Image (cartoon, rainbow, N blue to C red):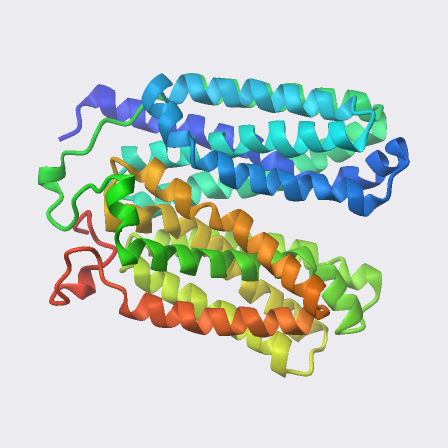
Length: 404
């Protein structure tokens, strides 16, 4: 039974996590700055935009170290450090005088700060609420998604009324203040008593990585991210080139994706506390396949195009919300930060593979075909996967390690 002070601390930690995640999500406003930075540096936009690719990769790599940092310093100190690094990285980005400095400041400093802060605060918060992991993931990851929308307005206003350097400095200061304020509200989650968790035991990272289930979950994760990140990244171009929409109409894809993405996080996150999480992932895969089938096989008009995007974005948002809790169902809560950290590398791998296939083999359709095949394989995996030690008699309880 949780004591009153512990009950208060975990809700305070949730509030701090939401505040921190909102600030960390601000990096997804990066596209606002491609044009102004390209003009300042006298470089093509594609070279400037590469900084965000590096940032995404650094985020994925940084997530693998979050668990070790938490063990040594605790969630509060590491989050404060991530906030300081984020603020400094953004400030230095504004003063970049070359592509190399831009890539270093944005791609490395901001990416590392965001990756460590994101995974650490998320997994720590989920550990505080073992009985409602799905809802808590939805709150935290939903805040991260809302951060991109909130800061889109903030950064647009800053760009309109300040110099580029001042905009980055103010963005960095606001993000730093929010992350540090959030960190001061957080406390490390207590270790879970494994004896009370009849359905799952805690596995170390080394033990988890020796199991086929770990790598099958990782493959499903890469597939989800490849489909989501690739389609979201080129949505406007698909609208213009495949559906022959005007630039203005195709740009509405950004709004459709944002709404569907957030809806997926909230709906599937809440659903995952009421039914088997592996089945929620299966549902997300079916929805993504429906979207991909429309892109591949249907003669698209404006409505069907936006519906296909909504399917992919809904699935993507839901999957990223459910996955931390799903990994804890399979391998336990106490080592979640480390166990999920390696799987989260799929974020970077998925985005790179999608872009690479498109550039090597000539565009959208080949990439869609590959994604569709991988989604079929991932669905077969999710429908047949069993938890470690599960003999198959209790497969209906997959995802209910907390005994709902």
